[in-house]
Length: 193
Image 1 (cartoon, rainbow, N blue to C red):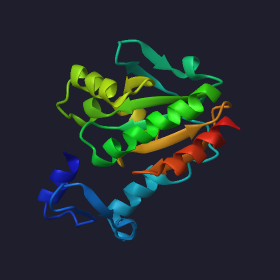
Image 2 (image 1 turned 135 degrees about the vertical axis):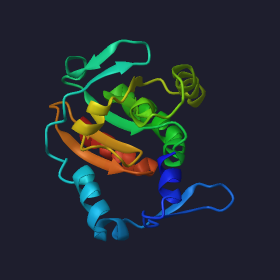
Image 3 (image 1 turned 45 degrees about the horizontal axis):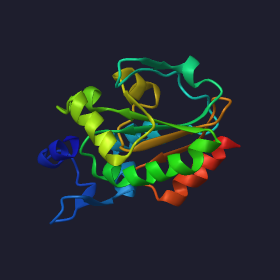
């Protein structure tokens, strides 16, 4: 939705390209974004300097209404996965996350999928989100990414965004956009060390 708004706004430079048939993003010109005076600063704020820092406190609501926060995640290696419904790179990431959970979950990596629909004012309902998760075979923790959680993690604005946190609560790897299964596995193993 946000990308469609950006495409319709003549003031926003064309930083990405879409496949004409599928509409899926095929290229993002990161160099042009970073060079742009307004967008470059915003992106730098989002992506810069997270590795080696303590993970921000997390207090979000699960799909089941439970509160998920720092005490329940303390001492656990985790992947904080920020996504929203209808996000093409997020959809492509789904089977890779299932595989990651199957491989590294038994070793102690907990995947926490933080959906930003509410914060982004996307009209997808809880039932639709839960059905999507079931259909994708997700067995990991599902929660709503509040505006505060997005802001605390650097004003997340690129989706998906992955924060890999070790057992000490330190971010060991941050990844933006679609990632290969191998990149996710390597980051997950790093969080488990």
